[in-house]
Figure 1 (tube, rainbow, N blue to C red):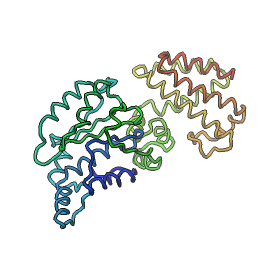
Figure 2: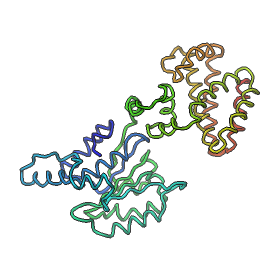
Figure 3: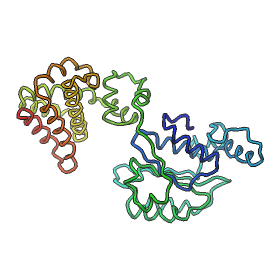
Length: 344
């Protein structure tokens, strides 16, 4: 893993490479940016560069004014790099949110603290990455303060979060903030280029997921392509006979009972995107529409209603998604939405 393996984020790369060259590596960093922006991959590349024997030798040669090797990128071939890539460096640790848990637990932080009591092997640092750092409970965050306030010379932390504002101020004031920009859509599409799915479906998956990894998971779901067709069919029914849309929804729900709540969430998001396309067509901006295969139908139907109608529909779909946290009866919410469409 090297910086070159992480797409985009050139400003972040320059900053971290400068830290390596100038030997100004901080004791703690906070990588902040949206999902899919490469925070974890960048953290791993940075850690590998710190462990890299070639980088370390180059820095020592620099002291002796004999530098001739790169000093800001892991070589990928030395013993330390190979050990890192094979997860064989005991001084490196990644802490992630456990499955079915809402926050990183105090127990996970305590285990880390026990490991930090021991000196690292050879001349290495103890590097630990905390993914989803915004889920740290207050007690877990407080437990980290000692190591952020009085770090050992051989310790370094990299915290990852979608938004630095979700990090307690006590922690934020003790780390070096590194901001990541949203991923470039063209770069994301390039990551899906080899997938056998049609272009529109890949664009839809990226729009919903926000990053290539989650988009790949969506594309692998059997129901994903069918839901795209279902959304279009539901809207067609709702515009003519809302009761038919309700019946269709009830019929289809039985097919995916195992994960219906999550799928209804995706369904609501697709509805919002479809109504956004209606607005694009109504405003003569069809080139921005996502459902390109339905462009002829969208263009025709968009002119049968006032623009205000489509705006209210889009707002209604968005409001439905906002209510998902407090209202667990997704099926009823969707049924009511289709019935109200006729009255909008």
